Length: 221
Image 1 (cartoon, rainbow, N blue to C red):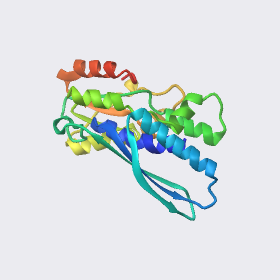
Image 2: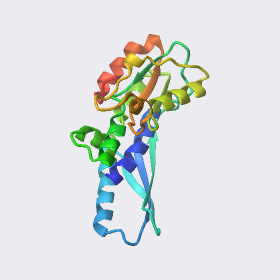
Image 3: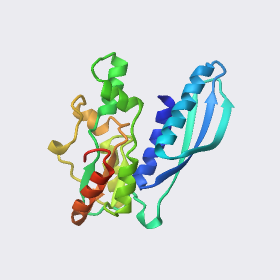
Image 4: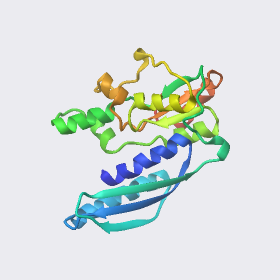
């Protein structure tokens, strides 16, 4: 789980810029007491996540640490300069869209720490997030959005950052919040670690954007 998530959260940053993954660098700080089986499983997780994304693990570094274990990942991708999705492109009148159902990862963490049952999909969302790579790349290639950011720190933070970078404000309709059934409103707004994508889309491009998301086939919007 640690190996997969370490890669996935970095791939999500590529997705938010419309970049296709190409290479992964992995640096590990390992306590001397770490069992070799745990190390092997961590590497298996890194390799599995990289392979699914079509990226190669091309290098990195191993160092000894008194603890804790540290896994540091750098993900590299490619995108044409004029198709890069940034946080700074939103304009007044744009519509906001988000992929997936929000708050699942926060609800999963709460379930793990509280010993709750019946939240397997939320636990999976927390332990092994799925970066929306196809969605980011296809939307960028179609130039269907004006700005994008992934939801590493929650929807509220992402909206604020896009607004600050773009020099405009935003209004979020409470009734339209795509909240996971097991998540609270607070978890959906600011729980973080969902790694969904938030897009700003000009009105004239909404239909083109919707077609791109359907083509990607990863998540509803």
